[in-house]
Length: 233
Image (cartoon, rainbow, N blue to C red):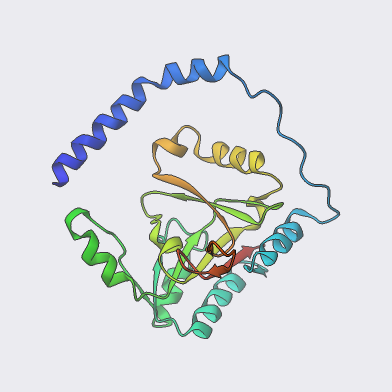
């Protein structure tokens, strides 16, 4: 099964590469009909605007003065929630290099959340009790309180999707005013590899929200109920 899967993925990658020139010509031939519009007028700075927007969506924003303060804030959130096991991005993917060693020092287990082919169902069932996930945030949009998370090797999607508590680590310089500016930041960092080398880009705007036919809003049905953005200043 793994061999057939890899062969299929290799064919898809090869097909996409052969289309690069064609897609580039189409992009040049059909430019956007108009430039991106201006951001919503506000007297707030980008950080304050992001904090206001995400707070309005029932998310929490913690402004931390440096890496040590950010690590301390993460540990405090986990202690308050009674968390002893987490799903987390790899040590070289999170923007706090000392975080994982500090978690282990505090006795918090970092679960191996790799999920493979035939073991997928059983492994997801084993990971379901894990109560918190920690990921990075590669960019943020101030006007909507949105965080952009690039998934790939060492950047598992489950950390921001499966547990009821999601802690996102966001360097302050990655907060942009608008969606086009946020994508421009990603493209400047990842270049053509943004979608070639990564599985997807997820836009997270507040905790998971579900509305039924009677417009009753419920948090946390299809994803994290609690979302904390740790802004590293």
